[in-house]
Length: 305
Image (cartoon, helix red, strand yellow):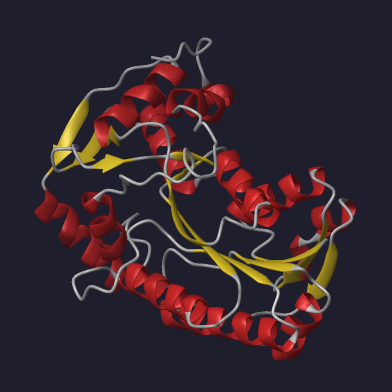
């Protein structure tokens, strides 16, 4: 089966492409930045140049495909890349092209915490709106909502690793008890592949790791993996909010946006982890993922806690 994919050069997209190719799917990818697709071409992936605003490119991408996997998303706004345009209008364009191409299965990546709540971040609200576009399309579909996708190349985890490696003190915003449920990148990619293979996997599914971890516990796992220990200093939430607002007004001042700070403090966990059931995937423990992430910098072989 031919699978069309958006976001193929991204962090999750690259893992999904590798997973599909190992299962002998034919893959065709949309390329907004052609200079980044060399590795995909080397793997035999078909390339369609264009972006989500290019209706012709989307039709060329999806024509003849049995499924389209839509992964494009942003975590922060920059320049013309706005949440509404990328998440909502981009999804609307993909759905329109899918309808024009005969109505293949649409597999859409959303995010844990997506909801229609005025108190939610714009990121989560636009993710919810994009889900609505897919649900209302009348097309066969599956919507996957992962928690923090953990693996080599994850930017927030790399920042945590670099802080532990290089800083004499590791800052922790607030009490550090907000919880994440980091899910291994390859487990997420497996879920996308299983949706293509199992017709009963239709609807909306939340994906989490094997355990809920506080921010402190995630730092603990990374320290064990690195073989180092750093003292931690508490940063009051009010000061963090002020710094995030300053960063929003003066880009580059703060490493976190107000929206990202809110999402961090909200946490990201699920009581309905679909990886276990109905997908039947045993999530990889975060300690093992942490060891893999930290391996290039570890002072001694990591021993998972």
